[in-house]
Image 1 (cartoon, chains in turn purple, blue):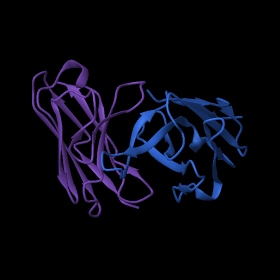
Image 2: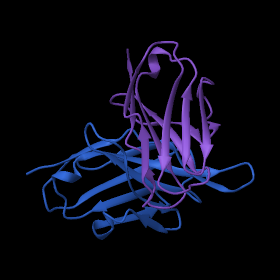
Image 3: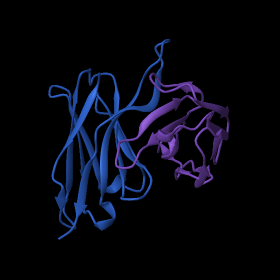
Image 4: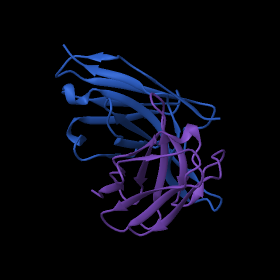
Length: 107
Length: 124
C-alpha cells in the first residue's frame, strides 16, 4: 500500500494568513493526488484533483501543487469557514489511501 | 446533480453481517466506478473498496476476506456486505462516486460525489 503522510497534523493560524499543508507519498504517484475538506459532522468535499486542478465551485484561494512524492495545498488567505480538517488522497494504485488529516485551527 | 443516499441498519451485532445499499440519482450509474469509504468517530478516512457498473471490484486488502460488493444497475444501486463485524467496524460509512471522465475521455479517479454518510454501530 502507498502510505500518505500529511504535515503538520494540526496548525494554528489567523484569518487572512497564508497556509500551506504538505502531503508526502511513500512512492511516486505522478500527479494522482487529491485534496478534500471536511467540516465537523459533515461529508468531505473535493477541493483539488490531479494535484492542481480546482474542483468546480471551490474558491480560488485554494491551490495545489506538486508531483511525484511531494505535494502541497495552499490557502492564500484563510477565511473563517476554512478552519476545518483537510485530507490528501492518492489514486495511483489501489488500495486508495488517505493522509491522516490536517486540522486548521484558529490562533 | 448526482446524489447518493446510503441505507441500511444503524446497529449490527458483533459477528454478524453489515449490509448497506447506496442509491444513485440525478445521473447514470453505468460506466462509472463507485466506492465505499468509512470514518470512525474522531478519526480519518479509510477506503473500503470499489465496484464498476459492470461488477468489477477492488477491495482494500485488510478487509478483503470479509467484504463483498455488488451492483444492480436496473435499480441504480450498489451494495456493501461486511461479515463477522467487530466494534472496530463501527464508523460512518459513505458511498461515493469514484471518478469521472475528463475532457479527453480518460477516466480519472477521485471522489467527486459523496453520500451524506450513515453511522453503523457494532454492539450487542
